[in-house]
Length: 383
Image (cartoon, rainbow, N blue to C red):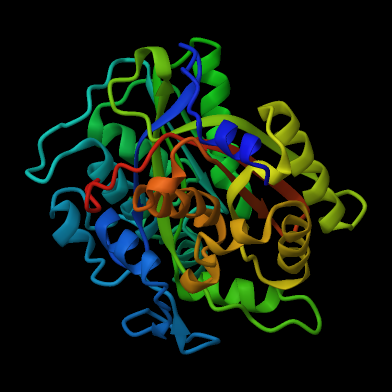
């Protein structure tokens, strides 16, 4: 990269009032239940695979990348959590960290147009399959645990987080697999741009369960190995720069998505990234950090190869591989954004630089986001 281009990339232009910015983020991950644990583990490039002890039911693999110490009642309290599914709990814990301080007091102002959008795969597979099993094996098909029926709905996680924090803005759940986090970010961008929301909690989540493990096991393409599964939730607070109450850590320059209809994931990723960079007004050579999803199988390998062919080699080394977290499925893209921000906060060279996040799903979905990092503000992992 030339000196002139390098200096231009370093400069952080004055943000337009309607520029969408990220003013807060957190991650519940296999590194731990908060942002500090995620930041420390990621920067140390620690592997997270461990015996999947305590998971109900037989598993196809003895190891997984689970959130350690994730006790729902301890983290969220006893009230209303007896039948709570793990997916919703992950989102609720992340929302607590994003909106509350260490004493549990509200730290972020919200209004009646603060929205929530959460990306998922298919909801809580454990809750869904448990209900189906009860219907098939109990004395009558309707002898099921009625208290878990609302929990099994696709939109329960987003709704539960909104109710917990009295968020009355648009509430949406998107089912997009491994690209869900980027679809959620783009959804928030559009609704804020249309004036339908003032700010958004947006992100994605995935739970680990025996049902999820077996579904992934039987879905593996011929010749591929069963992926090491992970779980977690990445959550962002996004708002327009002109009305942002928090200090912006990144500007969202572009978000693009498409479907690979030609069974050529590398070409689809390349086209998606090139369009996003063009809309963002930056060159591929300007990308300071790139974070592919490290999805398992052919699609993930094609994604990594396509990104490597577009951006400088150094950009691929700045953010540790997401493979350290296992295949986090729907949570992947949001955790990727969190990883980029965690690395940037500890590196003064990140100020004004461009970051690229990409994701692919085996069903053909492709998405990417281009971010402008707004300076290293290492806060010791505080949410």
